[in-house]
Length: 362
Ligand code: UD1
Image 1 (cartoon, rainbow, N blue to C red):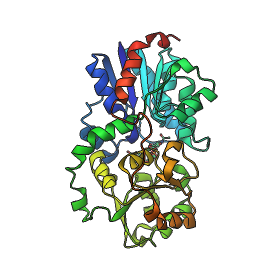
Image 2 (image 1 turned 180 degrees about the vertical axis):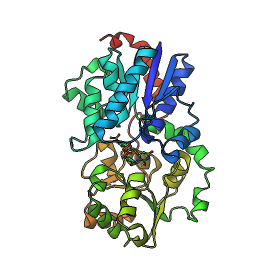
Image 3 (image 1 turned 180 degrees about the horizontal axis):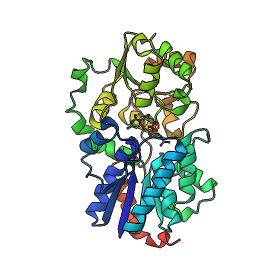
């Protein structure tokens, strides 16, 4: 059996790692395609290095663009690769534009699709990721759900039960298997940080960056907090702050750094006091690491993280944000972990792929 996996953006790389290794150990033929959606050294190559992922068999070099331009360019190139490789199954992970392009190109060529991280829903169609999730799930033959609520979402959309497999969270498997290694990171020394003395902020979503005034309001509010705030900044957010001339005006405690590789970021998170984010995966990683998370969004598709207040949604309202930061000392220190968020997710996925080939018939 030949499986072609498509990755392109930072969070994809973490998700494909354990699956790639597991399928390799089962002696399945694999082709790894990188669309090039993320291309900066610290958004792409460093992850392949940190995760010890093999060099992609095919690199499409698509790069940035509007959604239509980027997704369309990926589709036309992926179609060429699929024509040449003729895989039995295309595997896509997560909810980025590379995920959507891979799934559509594949099903149009009557090659079945497996989607890892199926069923997450924010029910907010203003989010490009939500559009990607809904569309990819609708055209996938194997749907691997990370949580029970994700399974329910898929059932509510009329997806056949036999195609849905509750396997757990693949990012968690990567996290567990890299935690030890991340302890060797020198990032705390490099930034002169004491354990448990600082917060982290990541912010890059369209909803928080498309309005630059809103973005600056968030930074203004955050300049009032006591703790140091380490901000590994996504290139888009960096560009906006630069263009607005705001980089020099950030408070003394806000420390802007380049995006970090996987192991350094894991080390930075593990030793932090709290995490502020608008990312999806970081909400899950915070829960696994028992670090209280505050999410700068109105909604989340990762609703399982909201249990026990492991994660709190504050939107972009400054008062709510400061209130949530003030309330941090009252938050729990240990959070119960969701079922199947463990180190066997890739095994469950490989078992299903091997044992349920009847589901690949279109
Ligand atoms: C993408 C995902 C998002 C994910 C994020 C992780 C979609 C719709 N969104 O968003 O879900 O959370 O990746 O980081 O796929 N850029 C660079 N260098 C790079 C990559 C991007 O400078 O290596 C800049 C470019 O200006 C580009 C912008 O970032 O236009 C946006 O990149 P893009 O991949 O389109 O979306 P992300 O915001 O990174």
